Every structure is written in structure tokens, then in C-alpha cells.
Length: 330
Image 1 (spheres, one colour):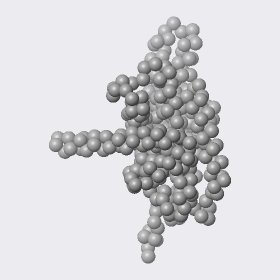
Image 2 (cartoon, rainbow, N blue to C red):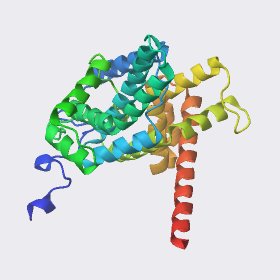
Image 3 (cartoon, rainbow, N blue to C red):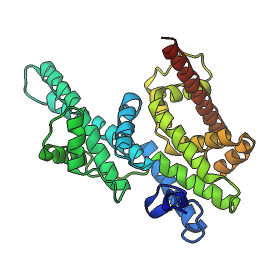
Image 4 (cartoon, helix red, strand yellow):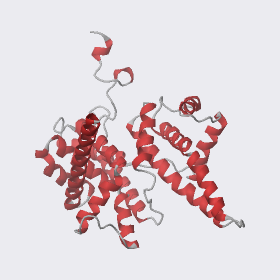
């Protein structure tokens, strides 16, 4: 049999596509899994209590689309694109806040004009910043597909930007320094994978199609990142029990919504439950009960978020079909 036909995947040396769930030879035992989950849950809880909780300004919509396409261009693993998106969101929020404080604290008599000039410069550098975030993320998540300076410069030239190697390195350093080198953080995909590992471990060998659920959950997480506001607005409206179209008004309500949108454990259990529902609806309730025991997220919250995600996905599919039919008619 030819070598290519003997391989079941495109992994290096024909190895299975990572991650490997419930691997008997090299898998993690239940005690370590539990400690890992507890540690991640504690970090998630501390983040939600933080005063400088993310406002999710730069981690959705066209920002996410650009980052995902760039990671796809460099054939980077899924973990990289979500890490790059988190880096970009945190960097841009901190970067713009620092620049604004600098202008406000200056002795200039034309602060508005200075600020507009700075914003123009920030906009012109956005593509470079996105690439730099993808560079850093590639080094965090891959051992042989990192984006080198040479590859980065080629990408920039193809996009119509002429940056020197030194400028590319300086941009990467600017991001690292702005974030105080705090670049490695557990992302939602990490939560999804630990939940699936525990579900598979509890269910026993081959009892659940964990790999299938993982692939579906990645697609769901990608769509949520691209349409974050639509998903969370619908979740807020459903849970608040108010009329469609009425969004948050008070600062306290905005704060509560920000906490929900930054809750990686809630997003992870919702994505896993939705992935199971899409692949095998008969298992949905059983998996939700298990997710509740594993994560301590209330059953009602998991059910509600799963419902919102599935409805949102259906809306995206319907809209895609409408757009496709309109393009064909034109």
C-alpha cells in the first residue's frame, strides 16, 4: 500500500491529529485531570472577579476573521488562532488605553488633533499588529510551524505593506512589553479539551465520539468568535426575559454582561453541549448533566447557552443560504 494511503491523517510522520483523547498509553490519570480542571476553574473565577475585565472589543467580527484567515494562510493549528485572537484583544485594549493616557497627560494645546493622528497611525499598523500576534501565538502553540520574520515579511509584502525585518521584530516586542510578557493564558479551547477528556474518561473506552465532538466544538467556537455580540446579546435577552431589541443600559448590567462574555468555562460547556446536540441529540441531556457535575455550571445555564448557540448557528446557516441564493440570482 502506498505511504499516503496508509496514513489516516496529515499529521507529521503519519501520527494522529492532535489532541489525542483518552490515550491509554500516554493519557493523563483521573487525579491529574481533576487537579488540572480545578486549577483552570480557579483562574477563570479570578479573571471574572478582576476589575480590568476584558470588554471584548477586538476579539470578534472582522478582527477575528482577519486573524483566522491569517492563521489559515500559515497552516497553523486551531489553538494558535484562538490564542492570537486573545493576544490581539488584550494588546489593542491596553495599547489604546496607554496612548490615550499619554495624550491626556501631555502639555499639548491640540490634544484632539494629536489623538486623531495617533488613531490614524494605529489603524495603519493594525495589519502588522495582527501578524505579530499570530507570530507570538505560533511560538506558544507549535514547535515547527512558527511564523519566522522572513515568512512574516513575505506576507506583509503580499498584502501591500513594506516593513523591514527590524520593524517586524519591534512590533512583536511592543506587544510583549505592552502585555508585560503575560502572553500565555488558558483559552476556551483548553477548557473544551479538558472537559472532553474528562467526559471520555468517565464514559469509558469508545463510549463517546470525543474526537467528533471536538471537531464540531472548534467550528462552533469559531462561529461564536466571528459573531460574538449576536450570540451573547441573544443569551442576555433570553435570560433577562425582556423584549427583543432591548439591550443593557445601566453600568451594573453592562458589568454583569461583561462577566458572562468573559466566562470561559460557561462558553466551553455551552460549546460542548451544542456539539453533542448537533451530532447526537439523544445524548444531549445526559452530557449536560455530566458537564454540570464536572464544571459546577448550573444545568439551566448550560441548557440556555446550548439553546442560544444552536439557534444562532441555524440563523447563520439560513442567512448564508439566503445570501447564496441572492448571489446566484444576480
